[in-house]
Image (cartoon, rainbow, N blue to C red):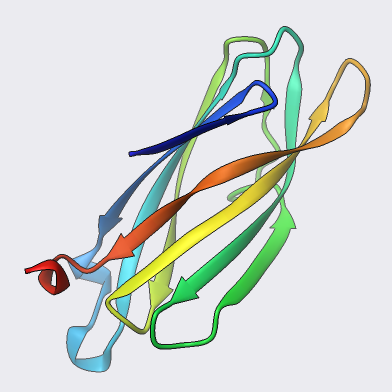
Length: 128
């Protein structure tokens, strides 16, 4: 698990290779990543948007951004948690993802960025 705290928001990431969504013969490697978000601030925050940098070891890197996560823009009260799972398809056995979320402090309407720690996407067979 990778964990990082930025501006009072804790982000933890775990990953899992998904054999059932992958096709090794076609060089398709699918990974799930689970993001746990914890608001350690004394004010409510809302996740507004995301930006991902996706590195695939045999292909060009991609930048992906958009509103919220999995179609939601969750509000977290103090000491609240939000968890979601999403996925990423690579064309190689190794990659990384990193990025940031833009949050809004709902007391001041101030926007701030929360860094997502870099996490590895590794096909288990490559590690042997």
